[in-house]
Image (tube, rainbow, N blue to C red; front, side, top):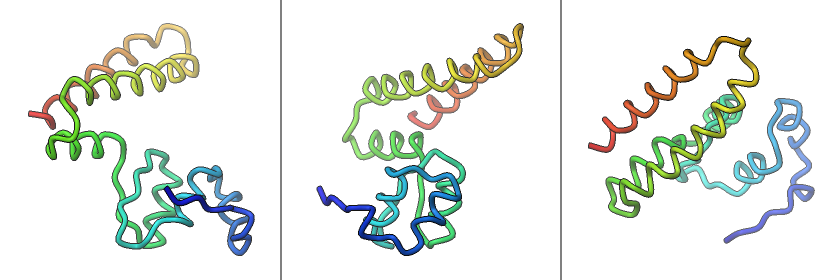
Length: 120
């Protein structure tokens, strides 16, 4: 593991913060090499990384790659995705007006179905 002190890279750092990036995203951008593939789900972080010339994937892409490389079982991948979905959709339910539960359930089913198709 390579640890980077964010404070030692003050040049351009404020721009990252102004764009809404967090310390973890910033430190990953600072530590990554151009040949690395960065895993970001956040749209702003993805846009910044893309603008800086990095290759990207998201959690779903990472899980599919690990499954195909036999580094992760389907059960493990589904467990990780399930935890992510539960967290994200609990937040989403809190933001949506009352009576929107059906929308969230449809989204969950769509994500699950899409993921299962990718794993097959």
